[in-house]
Length: 429
Image (tube, rainbow, N blue to C red; front, top):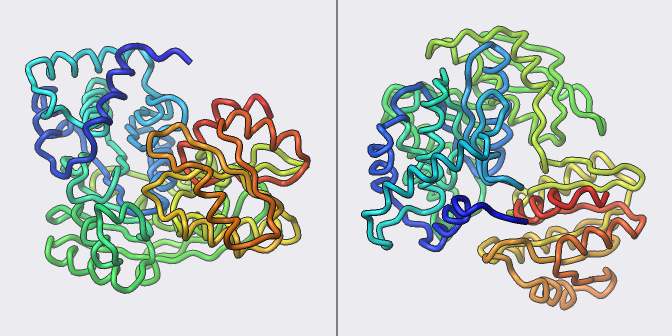
């Protein structure tokens, strides 16, 4: 695949690693004319579910007639997937133009002061949204919250999805420590919506909201849901809050966890009138029903089933396995997995090994310098069991051809990078 020089330049910025702090992002945004201050914004942090919530809430706003920006990460195939206005990704030529502007800004900078890939792309995205004169931005935090590049936004509404264990080398080893990083997005006097959390995390959120004078709404106290039905086509649920009950909402997103995510979306949508946006109930129905999020329990093939999911940490894998068991209680699944070395891969694999009816496990190498060797993963599995066949196919494209040739039910998971590799090759299916 040919990569144009400007996007290749952007990719090289990953070499400078993750550096906590907002100074570089603020500097870049100042050079771009502080575009992030030209529109209201919603900021979404958490460990799992951020993307689903961001995508759905932005769709509700678009359906309501508002010109809406959406910034998410990571991308699957094209980096412009991260930068969207009213459902349309930034065009390649527009992205190239923005990168060239960035390069001019950086010409006088020494290499050690260059931004990371994410810092640079965040500045580009916020500038693009200003050019497009969006009326509101829905923005997913990249990692953590307090020092994430997106936290330069003067957000009016903050959302915290379910907090779990991920990026622990940066965020901490306990729910309390990780939550303390996530709540860094809460601004003075804003509105905050939170998913149901473990008690240590919830305590941190409650305390931070009080310190900031923010009005907090959290799942289990201020709003709740009840799932009515589910099938391979999606789910139907009811939403209940102190002011509104909305019944019979349909979502194509699978799994009980998505019902919790949609509860957060509904509550956030109902609060938008407090920051100047009129959202009708019909828009909530339509916005949720028409939101699709690739590689979030996406069924690529039927008979046999091929399911692809971006689960890349223990909580995500556990949720994926629960959803498989619920939707397909009597079916055996084999797994195609590729994992990054900075993840809790031992715990992830242990969860898969404890699942009943595992056919075989194929390990491959996602297209990332952070990918862990399939040999390491295979060795870990083989030392712990002797009844599940294990295979190594290094190239994801060849692994996909293999699983297509074997008429079994397959689940592809372990990394969103792997999902991107598969989506590039999905015509094989």
